Image (cartoon, rainbow, N blue to C red; front, top):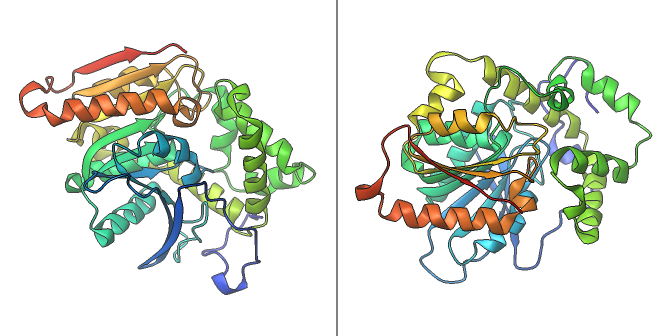
Length: 337
């Protein structure tokens, strides 16, 4: 657990306790990729045929590559998909330098794409991963074919009250206090809390999916760097919100050249639904998919709907040279479940 004085780096890998293995769904593969300063776990689905364009999926705060399994399955005939565990999350160990800023996470994604030679990719991001993907698309447009953002964590002036506890993780001492207050909570109780916060309708989680989530929570709670990664990444989001000039996330959103799909949930308790229109104005020529019944993780709640919207973006971007809308315009679609 984290203390009020956070260490500069996570414990060495050779002293970490042995924990249960990460779940790999049928048809998926999980491999480890060593890069300068980081080691990334990458989840993939072998393409159903040769020649499919590559895609990369980036999860949010506290998530992992498993958050994209349902959408990757929906899109297996459209893209050659890979999902990365950001440093300190999923099955990826902490970064050597202990840097969990949005810029550091973006640097990790860029390092992977440069090393793998898979770019340009169809880049997906959720929440924190949405902020990371926005930064990648802005600073390295050569690596991004299209951009799909699900409830991206972009700066809000008026934060929802339900998002305040997550933001408070960035404050010194809060994580230690929270860990002490919740020491008696079971993994099942923690998962129910996360599900209630992130899903528009928690009943959409199947009993099997809930059981897998509990198993994963039990695994994560055994990792000595779990709360450290959460705290530092939460602090990284807050710090990114305060950056000005060319490094400001909204300024970088305006610089994105790739065709963009924005997905917002009407029941999102972490990213304000009202931010959808601002995002649609910031990302030039974007498509906006509004899901009134969805929460913060629409790609998990409604993977078929998100997949259909992405396929439409794919078809539209193929002929974008002649039909692209004017800069600042957006195509808006609202789906009711």
